Image 1 (cartoon, rainbow, N blue to C red):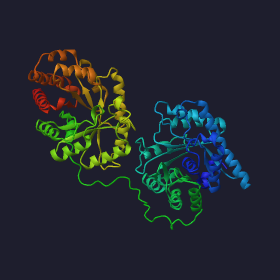
Image 2 (cartoon, one colour; image 1 turned 90 degrees about the horizontal axis):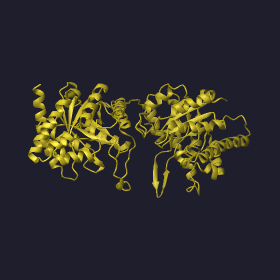
Image 3 (cartoon, rainbow, N blue to C red; image 1 turned 90 degrees about the vertical axis):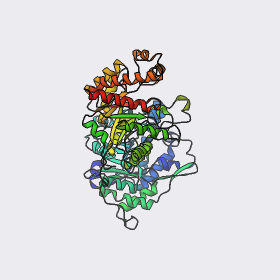
Image 4 (cartoon, rainbow, N blue to C red; image 1 turned 120 degrees about the vertical axis):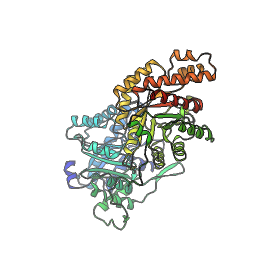
Length: 605
């Protein structure tokens, strides 16, 4: 029977996890699951057969982790493993039909294509390379599974459809129970997007969630009208000694998963931790065995997506001033390097009295550990009542840590954040301190933006960085436009201390439809200016400015710093919506004088 006809009449029961089940067999530790297609083919064929005997009528090839980057560019070996994986799955099906004496048994083999994790290669090109090998072998059914990003998949689906119009293509994403992938994508948006593509037959979810949580997630996602492929995990992993195992109940899994067809599942199977026993119990439940004896009564039927808003939204005076074109002042302070935050609090209080509208707090600048910027921001807002904007890097936090920090910050009244990728870890420390870099600032912005109105009742105002001192500023502008499309509403620029920087700022004003806070970093001495020009990435200082500071004592240099900073602020005033002043060496009093000077000159017209 054609698979499309089959799915109109019944649910297609897929197999369970190949990888975790393979690892439960003896003497498999030294041979990767996919490489076993060549080195232990009898075991892989046996596992496929076990799932067929358990009731699976959809068998997925043992090729999930096969791509050229995973085989270090050894194309021949990757291709050999793909070919062996395809042949073993088909041999298992042929053997099953012969053994059951039912040559007409409907069993479908799916060419399995897992995610491309190497960021240095084109995902689309790699997917197409894999798909082409399967097409040559005669594959008609394809499944792209466990994806955290959509990159390259649509192109590969279009390629398959062009080469084999009758192909059946399934695209499945891996989402946490909260509805987000590991790369920060909203899975509802992904399912909606791919469900609308003419080259995709079926969308779905697999991995990362247990059956219970996947059922709850599908109910929350409002997927009515979508036909789905669902493959939940057996449960959640636990570590026993050196082994990671799934200690779960097959009866419970089967009872919950058997509810999924009522939510649109037309293909149903298992992911990590599910064995043939899980599939056998699921088959029995799908045949109509009693579910109510096992399934908890409190599996929710609720489809509510957004939490209820509690209380009134606090006024965001900084955003109000930006919108009313009052040119507010944001001042950056570095967080303390130790447990003594008294000077930091004193400087914040001084700046508030001097008229700073917001304090921005760097997140471990130059990749050196300091007091957490978001926690400090919460303290400032709570104790001093000033608007705050913590910087948040993707360098040091994965998705879970980012979300947890954002939710805690939101509860404390944080509404403005600056998202940056973060300075790289110094080379000598890389063996000791690892960067996370689960996503860059653009992907991080898209993730945070998707939380607005969904995971939180209000919204975050997302800002980014704009390097007006970049050699090729056109690239920076294009990146800024991408950041806008990801949800950023404004940019804080690098300090403008050159004529070129000012010209680039003017260009940004013409091309960006976003708030721009012009960067000002007071120079305090000739040595300080030379250091910034030579050693701080993203800052350039005109030779003329350096020369003006030569030979000045501290008092005279501070007077000149106020004058130059004021001159720069006035020159950029028609191109910016506000000012972003970076405090040098914790000299908050100097920044306070600059704020006074700029406000006075602006009031004079």
